[in-house]
Image (cartoon, rainbow, N blue to C red; front, side, top):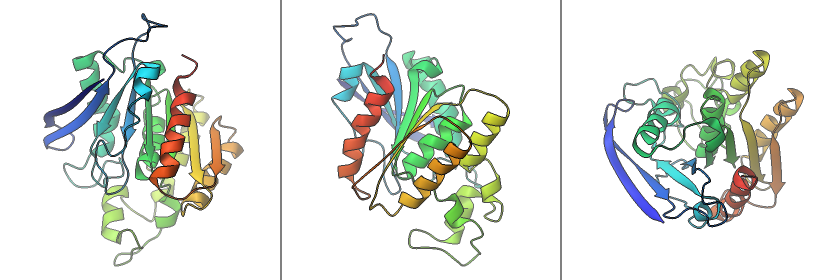
Length: 256
């Protein structure tokens, strides 16, 4: 297994940036000619690249892992210059990996997953770029759009204040109606009869984010959008994510 830390100038962030990669050294013995797939793995709020790495799984299924550091940007294009985290993950890094490593060539071999804030990012990014990502997995996803809608200046919650959410999501009066809401993206794709990425969701029943995850699950069911949804005992912690990233990766790659 080869581990890389790559530094480059990011046009999306208007500064030097870095990301990390894991690449299996040897092809699978049972399928030596199988092309290598790519998984973009997204960290959570306050996290960074490499916070959680399922190290044995890439060799099992012959895929590379790309791990960006996106600070607390919610994987959205924020209002300020240099905060284009959606473009960073969904466009810039994909193009960089394609040109430099000849990976992530098609949706069939380009997937994305994340936990908490990264779970939101994985689902949202895949729906925003369905021609890039074939599958997406969100674990304990921070599906907070409805929770922050209509928040007023000077307000906030236990995680952050109005200014932070406004920077990431834009106008909070209309946040539920715009493309920063995964439901809006999914509905638009279905209405336009475009191919949607395959979706996988999991959340612990004692997690404080369980209700928003159930809400998206119900929305997808109502829209008759195919997805896989799981609940089991667990809270918002690495124990749950370590269990379900294995299951999510199996879901993504086992059929290959």
